[in-house]
Amino acid sequence: MATNQQKLLEIRPENITRILGSESKVCAVNSRNVFDSFLHDKFIIMACNTRIKHVIPGIMRAAEELDAVVGFELAKSEGYIDGGYTGQTPKIFVETILEYAEKIGFTKPFIIHGDHITVKDTSDKELSEAQALIAEELKQGYTSFAIDASHNPIPENLEITMKLVPPILEAGLGLEVEVGEIAGLQGKLTTVEEARHYISTLKENDVDMNLLAINNGSKHGNYDPDEEVHIDLNRTGKIFEAIRHFGVSIAQHGITGTPLHLVGQFADYGIRKGNVGTNWQNLAHDGLPPELFQKIKDWVKETGKPIKKSTKVFKSEIDNIPEINKKEIADAAYISAMEFIRGFRAENTATLLAERLFT
Image 1: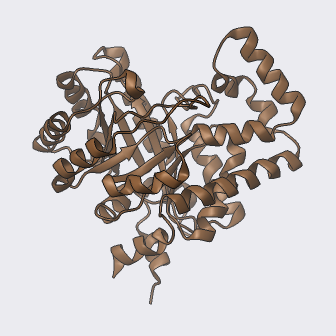
Image 2 (image 1 turned 90 degrees about the vertical axis):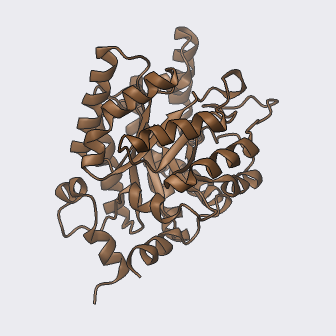
């Protein structure tokens, strides 16, 4: 009789099985299965924007030890077809994740997510770029997608989203959509009525999504040392109550810098996916050889660009740091991932997913 683990492997997305072959035990899963199963559970699945690859094995070790479902993701800006600012094309990103999973014997279910497939306006250029990226991510094995047309007014946002989702829905894969640009308190916070109208309109047009990202006061990137984190959880909870009957929960962006003892409470307000990105970049930078990190800081000073934009410029050197530094970064990521998974209340979600799907 097949175990639940074996059953999970049997329902791997077709694009993943095609890449891995049927004998592989690596368990990349469709995020639709995950978030449909966990809609009403008060825990959060951690999704990691791994701009520098050395953090990945540490995250996997933590997820294995804590029996947790996790996600790995890159936004359009981070990993476009040309590699974005990290130098990771969709092919490189998926191959990197799967190679680490095979190497360390990672057996827990995980998601490969196309984060922030951003479309800033309704021009043919913006739409065609997004369509090309979706096609490439599908080809390379992504199992989840986030369409982000939140920079546009809601009517245009809806129009763009409905144009982009057909290949994702045809493949039966997980879908995240966004209303209200993630911009901290400087942006306009998403209202309950906007979220209800947005989701109901998509549903009326046969768009079946799992997650909604909103602007509830969070922001991307690091928080300054004296800067308070302002996330309107009451508003978030009201939005969740307005959309949960559609089978949709909340994706929370901008978690780096939020005190971990507070993060678990997010699940009480309908948040089921939590994006953690800059945290892993910071840990990787801390573990780089000092002379390399000094070169990166000098580049930032000379160019005036944010440090994340240095990732592609120095990718070859970063990828080939000494083994002792790779281990230091992976170990730091392991410790941090353990803290996040526990903070997100996500222990034992891997076993629970299998039980929900097969028993």
